[in-house]
Length: 312
Ligand code: PYC
Image (cartoon, rainbow, N blue to C red; front, side):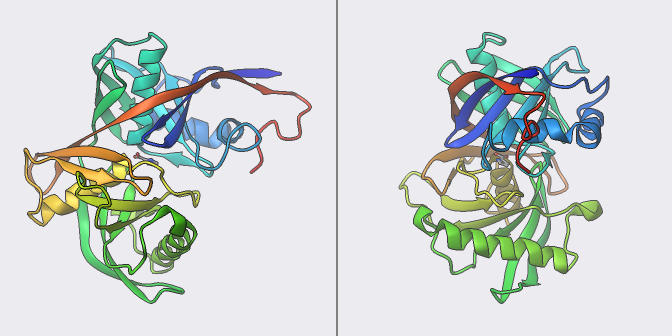
């Protein structure tokens, strides 16, 4: 029987399960090296942690590992119901709140290594965490994709730690009650991008689709619906998605250093973002939000349990 200690939290509605103890030995190396080992040799561990019967489809997992660099607090690998993420901002905010809750860090600035690169977290006592994310950029504007069932759709391709296709002109109602139709639409866009061979740099799969519309809240600039790789929608405004959005706004001259972008989620929660111009159309985004710890528990994987590695 194996035991895995986890702390669960949600960041503006989106859940994160941080593995505190019980992860497989992934050997030495960078976050990218260890992610390759996790993917190739221990995919059952990913599935056991986030899939039913111990988890659920919307859950994002995070494994805490010893960092390579002496000035980082941790190395973090993110995963979901179907695979792995290069970076996850809501998950990093959850990690910050979890480490604070567990007494492993104090409020302040901390560095974390991820497969997409190092990021830093500015953790406040009240659970608000600002993430200085990886450099982000738009790689293509006004790309037309002929979808299987929704006609022609135009959007931008951008990197914010994951690859996104960002669509403003979609004709869909952005409300939670319409989530099934939004999911079908965004899933169609994603599959059609794949059919058409439209990718990010170096063939990177565009596995997140973002739909934008006017905000519901008076204090927000925009509202979104974000479809994640496992066909679940992001309950938060999606931090890597907000980074990608800000990269597009910056490229269009609609967002400059010093201005705060307030991105509302489909649930009505908000991330605040700012950009730092690092040249060549690239920004370093900062995205902040709040996370709350919801459970401290031990997952048990029985040797004779037919769903020891989750239901895949
Ligand atoms: O906040 O970056 C994010 C994220 C990615 C997938 C789910 N949340």
